[in-house]
Each structure stands twice: as C-alpha cells, then as structure tokens.
Image (cartoon, rainbow, N blue to C red; front, side):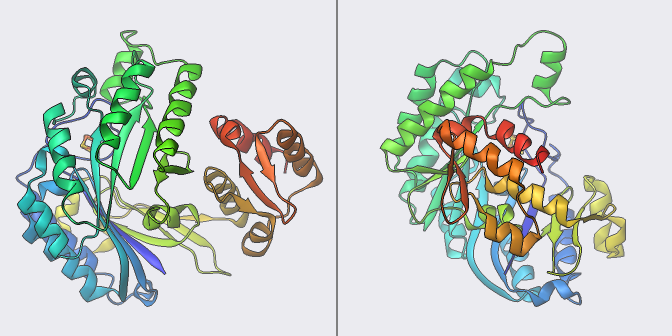
Length: 385
Ligand code: SF4
C-alpha cells in the first residue's frame, strides 16, 4: 500500500514562521494544474503504479486556493494513473477560503478529511504569525466544518510562541474544543533561519521562548486535549480513537509514497532493495515547463539511496515519537537492526526514571515525561549502538 502527496504551492501571503515552498503569485495556477496532471500521468508506465494507493494528501501551500474543478482534475488524474483503493483523502485548507458550498463540493468529490490551518484564535498571535485569516474567520470555518458531514477533520494549532502565556494557550484550546475536533495537530513554534521570524531573531528583535516554557505548554495541551478524549498518538498529533491520520502515520512506518508538485518529496523502498528518496525541485517556473516537456528528470533533484542503518535510525526516531513506539522484533526483522547491551541498559535506566516503557515482549514506548525530551533520548539511544 502506498500514498500520494500533491503539493499545491500557492499562498495568499507569507506566514512569518513558514519554511515550506510556496509562491504568492496566483496567476500561474492554470498552468500549474496542467503540469501536475501531466506529472501524475507520467507515472503510468512505471513500477510505482503496481502498489495500491491507500491515501491521498493534498497539501501545500494552500490547496484551498484551487477551484473545485481544478482539484477534481487532479484527483481524476490520480485515479486514472494509479491502482487506487483510497481510504483517506485529505485536503489542507485555510480558514479564509471556507464556504459551505466549497466544503460541500469537496465532500461530494470524495475528499473525506479536511486539515484546517487555524493555528490560533488570538488576534495578536494571528498577527504575529502573519496569517491571512482573523479570529472571526477561524471561528466561522470551524462552525461550518463541524457541521459539514466530513468523515473526520483535523485542526492545526501552534503553541510555544514568544510571549504566549499558558492562559492564552488554554483559551485557544478551549475555543477549539467547542467544535469537538476529532483530530488536532499541535506544533511548537520552530523558528527557522530564512523565515521572517528567523530574521528577527538574527537581528536581536525577537527571543525564542525557553525550553521549559515550551514544555509547560506541551504538558498543558496534553492535559486539556486528553481530558476531552483527544489523545496524543504522536508528539504533535492528537485524536479521538479511530481518527488517527493514516497518511502521516504511514510516513512514520516507512510506507512508500510519491510526492508531486514543486518541492515535494518521495520515498520508495522495496524489501531487499535499497530505499530511495528524491524530491522535486522547489521551483514553480521550472515545474510549469513540465506540461510541454514531460521529462521528469528536469523537475527532480538527485536521488538518495538509504542504507539499512540510516533507515533503522530514522525508524527509531519516528517510531519513538509515536504512542505505539517500536518493537525489537520489528527492528530486527524489517531493518536487520539489533539493539546492543549498552542500549538496553540505557533503556532500563530511563525506564527506572519513568521516561520509557520497556515491555517484556520488547516494545519500547516513551512515557508522557519521556516524550518531552524525546529528541535527547533518541539521540542517546542511537549513539550507543
Ligand atoms: S499558509 Fe501555510 S504554506 Fe502558506 S505561508 Fe502560511 S504556513 Fe506557509
């Protein structure tokens, strides 16, 4: 089973923290859609179509800037080209694009999951993030979404903003919980160089919050969401039972996926062969030429081959960030990775501190205390191999 990711690289304006690939010009949308249809079709004669496609994720950028007709064209191209048995089709949306008619049309075309980029309801924070929507639009879109009959939906929140108090975070979470979201993705603000916030930090105009403060935010979020029956199943993802994201969960388990559109990544691993990872160039103008040339080499960058050890370490990193964790058996059978004595000793020690659960049948899971310092535990563990 594999997944498909379509990257729609258009945004109304540039959010201050964002380091995804996007452009704020929208005149190129028709050409882009033509190119993307062509790129999807270009997979028709490849081995990639032999694996059934289980999930489709339309992300960005802002996919909700495309018309429903354009989205339908892309979905049709996927169905025509790949062997599909799609259980989950997600589209990312921004609150300022939501109307009842648009939501109804998305649902009617088979999209069954909406990911809404709310981030906050606090007017000051929305301004700080330079989001295109305001508080009223955030409330209105969730009102419409919660009544729209989608099988499931998810809402993005950002916490750990400079100057954000615990009370402000609590207000954001309580406002969100009024709409009974089945799934929430909550990210602590990361300030990347090259973003507007990154530049402000370099100029000394902004100080990122301290780690302790961010941990307090994380603990509060956990508590408020789990009290509402929305449980953490990955460090940034929470859901009601049965509403976990299939597409993203598959990334963490090294399932295969093809990413299309400028800047999209792909991963393919046939057992007994080397795993491959490649990405499309993050360049819309170049991508648009694909509609004439249809030469995939012109839009992709070099491929990386990943060794078993690299894959094992990635799996440990991604798996230990999830509620399921990893098992010694899976690591040995799928990756040929054996945990050494020093690693087991380290895990026992962390278990005695209440940071790790290490079960008799060899499952390793980080506890609520351990997950706060997941990166440090994972790094120690990998280094001790
Ligand atoms: S809408 Fe999303 S992709 Fe676009 S700039 Fe904002 S965060 Fe980045």
